[in-house]
Length: 244
Image (cartoon, rainbow, N blue to C red; front, side):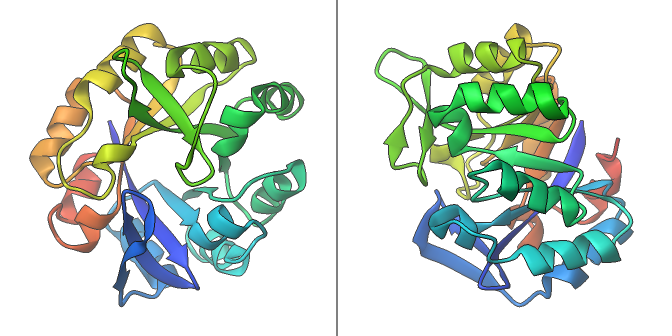
């Protein structure tokens, strides 16, 4: 399993939100470019960057910082947040990102994402599905900053996207995001079991290095870690241990 450090940007600053709530923001005194360089030095081979301003308001609010990180570090960058059109996706790729995460579009317009997968190939596209449990015991993807439920259950949506060529999936359990409550083990076991050909990235809940071990045992290919690294709950040495 690969540990992927996360950098969330708002107003050009490094921040973290609890459960995606913009009113529950923690600001960290890190320069985002220097932080990316520190993660590279620690052994990261991929960094995950989220543009929170664009996720909420659209546009490319932090694109210049993303471009700087892509040009000043020698490792791959995966980025998402507010990608609502092909022009948005292409802007991230032109800025130097290796992969772009599509979130709400996968929920609202899976046919459009399927067309982009056909046109661009599977490697530059990551389906970023943020989910919460439903009353029937399944998982429902959310859109629009987790305020809008999709019409298709998680496994059905992933199946549809896989048929279109999807190879990269980032799945976040909303209830665990930023809460240090451990990874959603059953969710990831189910995804890996049902879609073994997809490279699944776990996200949400990591609060210790034991949590990384728990995530690895589910079979996911990678685990994104943000706040736990920033606050020292997961040491920087763990990045090299989980580099692959």
